[in-house]
Length: 332
Ligand code: UT7
Image (cartoon, rainbow, N blue to C red; front, side):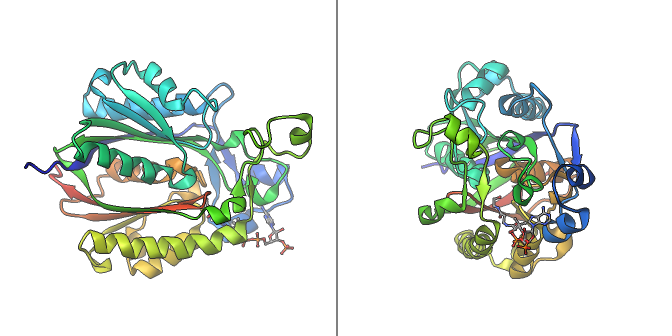
């Protein structure tokens, strides 16, 4: 039997050109550049334009990805979109991007695993490819977090930004081979990061509007504690699954929620700081898009060499978490 292997062969990303700086935020809420930089590492984040939605940003990233791959949208078998800020509760944002791309052959669905969404989607794509069901899958992370951020709540509004990333996952070829992954969840802690309103439990009403339940709520300290612990455990498990040791990891590509979380994982992994991808300063936390944006920047800068092992790490609402090991095979 021939073993099928899933590879990320091409990527693309999209960031709106509208920039929200810490100085801008100082004018909106009681905060300071000093607090934001020292507590989070963030200086700027991108904000989508009026009339620019999650599907538009996802489409832009996917279009670049397919152009890089020189693949006609009609060759795509499946589109998976990871997002917590879909254009609508339904239909899925994946269906909207399918239409924008003209990828009429593709099946399409969304995955909702918050900031771990990109890894949940990649793991799903790998499984579809390696089981022989599909050959070409577009995985997209796209978020318009500015649409669910409360710009009157200083504890959250400084943290989030908008943007999208897409990758083409194919059977065989060359690129980043998906070698191992691990996904996890802890529903007991669902209250720590939540968008309370707009679902069937609290449909939109005057009451939910008054309570600002249409904006995300986060217990930052609670989340922080779980984030470090869960990602550390997940990292160990996945490195072992890939038959590697920490020393053999060449690049760490973590979710970009907080520079202090990233630094703690860097220490734990024992990897040199120069081998850790950090975009948090420029883009803040872009949830399901952050890992894809980081990966695309690495590819653009031609940082990844033949045989390099990459460790991707994510954590988010749910709680959810995940880790994945990729190996560069057949680099040009
Ligand atoms: O991507 C999904 C996963 N998300 C995460 O992983 C986020 C994890 N959490 C964090 O990154 C951090 O907990 C935060 C950055 C959200 C907060 O940092 P912290 O060091 O945990 O601060 P804190 O929430 O404990 O607040 C410390 C103080 C409080 O004041 P008091 O009570 O000590 O007087 C807050 O009111 O900082 C205050 N504060 C602020 N001050 C200025 C909170 N937000 C701000 C702000 N500017 N923007």
